[in-house]
Image (cartoon, rainbow, N blue to C red; front, side, top):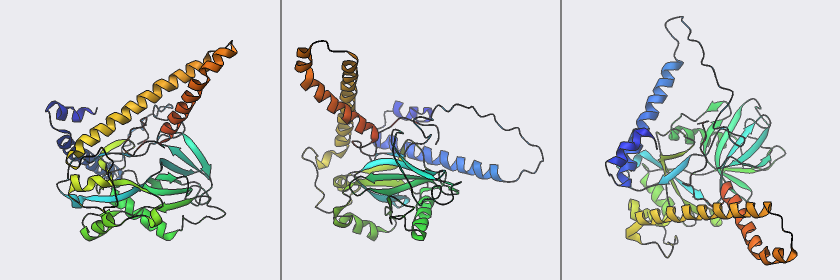
Length: 351
């Protein structure tokens, strides 16, 4: 846990209050860092030059191909004091990933950093401007073979990581209006569609979006939930309280915002106990991961033990086949197929 947040837990604050305090502290830190970067970029009055810092050849966070991870959300456990400081983004069901266009090729990486597909695209860094680099935060919907774009770390020559979310969204919208990245062509093998965002300052637009069902045409893709981005937040490659998440059926209970009645809550959800549902959901997800990890270990052990008798192989075949399916589930879990957005992947130092 970040040392700057440890005192919050010692004070016994509930998780909603802790989240509020962490949001304020993180915003303050990011603003100071942006100001420092602006100061550092100004010409110095003196001609003295400071020696450059030596860079280590090894990066502890450079795992499985890229030093970046997607920015992940937390549950929204309280209604923000000023909801107009936030942006709403409908998030579809799919595989969360980072798409990197660089050196004439485009690759997609799972939340855990595994590359699962490479292809050609018209993004800067691939077919055009090959010396540039584009890194998009996406949800990949396999049936439609489409990448739905949530956010960006960089786009061509423009590095966006330390920019505020409101600017990143504006920049992406401008680039997608200039180029039709959703069109399949000789230089673009996959569709890229930019997801809409709604400013809570425009209450009528937000209300219209929440009452619209389905929110995506013909319910393709299917809506998974809503992401909330603080307008002034930088992009960080880890879980952050400045990006939050709610399922549609939670909107009324947490924020007092009604949604279309077509969004059905699961049977075990009680409207007056939204926070308890979040805790139960997280606990079940953690237990599921633990079970898969233990069963995966058992599969690996069985694969390493040779069977000398056909009878033994026959007796264990059903169990072995079952465990193999579990192993496949674990692989899919690592790829992000079974995770909701706020699940945490391995960390990386690149952000």
